[in-house]
Image (cartoon, rainbow, N blue to C red):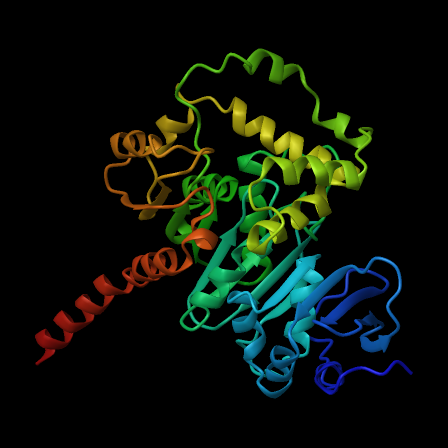
Amino acid sequence: MTIAPDPIRALVGRYDAAVYDERRRATRIRLVVQGKEPVDVVIEHGAAVIVEPRGRPDAELSAHAATWAELADDAGAAMSAYRRGRLVARHDLHAGIGFLAATSGAIGPGRLRFHTIPANGLRLSVMEAGTGPAVLCLHGLGASKGSFLTTLLALAGRFRVIAFDLPGSGDSDKPIGAPYDAAYFAGAAVDLLDALHLERAHLIGNSLGGRVALEVGLRAPDRVERIALLAPSLAWRRQRHWAPFMRLLRPELGLVQIAPRRVVSGVVRTLIPGAEDGWAAAGVDEFLRAYCTPAGRAAFYAAGRHIFLEEPDGEEGFWTRLAGLEPPALFVWGKRDRIVPIAFERHVKAYLPSAEHLELDCGHVPQIERPKKTHEAVAAFLVAHDAPAAARGRRAAAGRR
């Protein structure tokens, strides 16, 4: 039997299969105590076993010995250490963070857990924690539910926060030939609410997920409480010279495209500043995990194509429809966002004057780049929906007196 440090053995000894959803036949996770030889943990058939390191692991967790000791003693320490950068997770976040959740020793309905939900013929991968009013998180193009881990940790104290991989992304199904447009993703979100037996929920969406959240609000306003939009993808107002060419491109070409992981990884890390460290590195890992599969590439191309080609005007144009949005909305803009420039804010104000706005000194992913300010603003906005009901209750009580 492989000899592992005491904290590692303590963690593995309290592995709870009910918390981590195994999607593979076997999952290999490498645990690195900095300055010492690593050990691997293989999760298979609902059990976790320490083994000798071998090959490329599905996920890797690395920390100093003191941090591993803290994790072994304190059930709530893992997520705090990860959020502060004292514990580094690489490659597959679903597997790495899922292992931490399954070995935390936490109990109760609000504990962090990973599971797969069958929803209208699709298997959707879900990460959730907390109790209270439901909040559904929708990630951006090329990302996964892991991009909302900071949000889940920040809001789980007062909400039931549910983040899921959109179809075509992360660990959810990737049906070949699906449209992968806003309406399709919105349908999947409503199907998930149905599968979870949730009549209504708040929505939080980043980038493409913001566009999907708006689509849910437009198509099924009775299922939505409030919508927080973090740098949402919106239909372009300016002329799109490449539109005719984009219409000719077929996303299905991704099924036959040769995409060696090493080559794709090198290109992506060159394009993204800081892609070797912290959250950026984790985000790149999640992108590669889906893009380096044929179905994931096809889904990525299809979704990107629809974002670029969406019609802004006309009876069914995005901006025309946006004016009819019923649920209250908060837009969070990044002043340094190069993907969805803050100039879009003035268009939203013109078409949806009732919306609230917040500008932050960040780029395209506010919940990761400016987590404290983002989550404080979002939490305040979401709890505001209780104020009118509380006021009515106070007035009614006063009337009875």
